[in-house]
Image 1 (cartoon, rainbow, N blue to C red):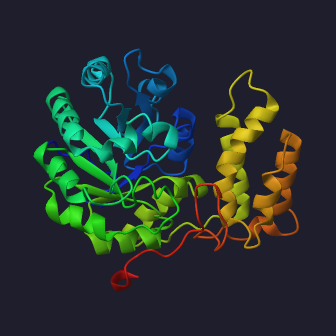
Image 2: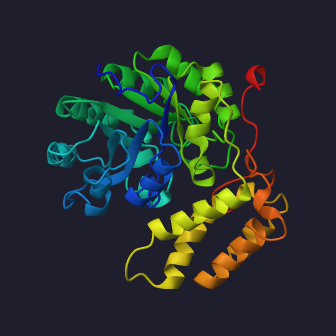
Length: 357
């Protein structure tokens, strides 16, 4: 088994930024790193099919990685020959490992029998894992959910991870069909930790340092992988290390949040993109950031209706800077009852088992 790269704090539980398609590109990685990077980054997925070639935009997060931290290349696909070719194509690049996506819950993805769709067929998956373990010379890792529409195959899936000597399992403890609407059942992560020789990272609704600590203590996992909550709170990895070292944990103010939004707006802007299109993309980030601003959700309501750059920043100033708001603290947890994406999520809930909540 290949050991994971060193963590920033030797011997500390590892942290990773979860791969999120159309989010975790090079500019976003750079922004997150500026607030205190995770130990490990994972790219957006490289689509793998008969006509695929390495996506230049995704590849730039590897070839132009300035974060100082290791980056893993994630693949999504099912054809053995095409997966083997893509592994060969990635060989010259400075990656810390290759990760297989077995968790994407987007219907347009799983209907093509890739991502989370592969969890419906353990026999096919056995062949894919075997091929990749043979082809990948270094670290081979997997990001997975507990099943497709239920957990009937969970034990078999964990058995396949062990059989093929996977070097790291990042487990999101929901099924694919649950998307982000159900409770996260961390007992599955605890089971994976108990059954596997490889390290396990816990993923799913890890919203704060306190939540991360509870999940680590309950599951015994080697590390945590955080996605949506790192969009909301880019300080979360720094805060985790501060907490681990018994140092004062940084508490951002709304003025700090305003500066973060400025940085996101500038860093993610692409030359030639229409103003309205960039504002629309920024609202995808702000859907999450807004969950920590005001309990009533008024900022979330108004920012979703911004059309122009002027509208966008006027709303930000109104809620984050004006009338004494600048010195108010940003909420550690998402405010109860607020939802970033109502079509595929429910409000964050406490989902640790009673024994560790």
